[in-house]
Amino acid sequence: MHPKLSAAIATILWGFTYIITTTMLPHNPLFIAAVRALGGALPLLLLAREIPPRAWWGRIVVLGTLNSGLFFGLLFVAAIRLPGGVAATFQALGPLFMVLLAWPMLGAIPARAKVAAVLVGAVGVAMVVLKSNAAIDMIGLAAALGSALSVALGGILVHKWGRPRSLLGFTAWQLLVAGVELSLVTAVVGDIPATLSPLNLLGFTVLALFVTALAFALWFRAIEGAGAAHVAPFFLLTPITAFVLDAIFRGFVPNPVQIAGVALVIGSLLYSQHVDRRGFRPAHHVHPANKP
Image (cartoon, rainbow, N blue to C red; front, top):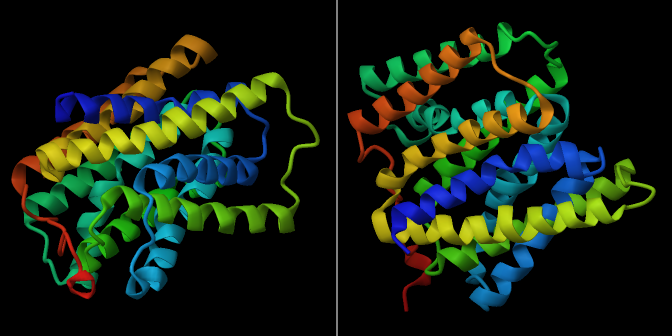
């Protein structure tokens, strides 16, 4: 399969997260996040069949918490409380948040054009949220923003630290860390459904196997085949997919101002990619600690 086709399929699958959450799953966001993380980790671990180097264990805990634990937990709070397209638009801002975080953390001073792209993207999100015909839940809004910031911070640390040899195993262990963390939090909080219907079980199966394990595997294949800079714009397919599915299955049709806002977000991301394709190269494909 062509790498860019893999990227397109992966990001479209991620767009299904929101409609699956609201139509097929119980309203228990922490429980959903835990099942997604564990259900996505196990198939990838079977494929990778490796244990990360001891020097990486602490870093994988940190990265698993940011890239999957906090991210998934907040993501599903947003998915339950907000229209799917609105929640997904915040996820599309993750690469732009990385631009701002890279300045204090990596010493990478962003170009004026990149700062402008961030501001335009923020305006686009404001148009999507503030001009909605439906009431916007502020807890859902904060969760969506927090999930985007969490995964952006995790991405910056990956660029700073590099990764072990196997990208698939690296991701599988992060998901496992997140699954354990989310399971513990779910048990403490008691965010566990009393019963699970056949529809719930089907939804969890689709979410874990297709939207998580398969989508991540396709995404990593795309990165290895085409490079991160060339496949990053495909993230834009996630909010577009979520908006289309909302319109089809939930009758939520964005108004003209919201459509313009989504267009601004998409335009800002494309422009940011065009301005500097080398701005966020990974620190190392293999960390020095892993060398023989």
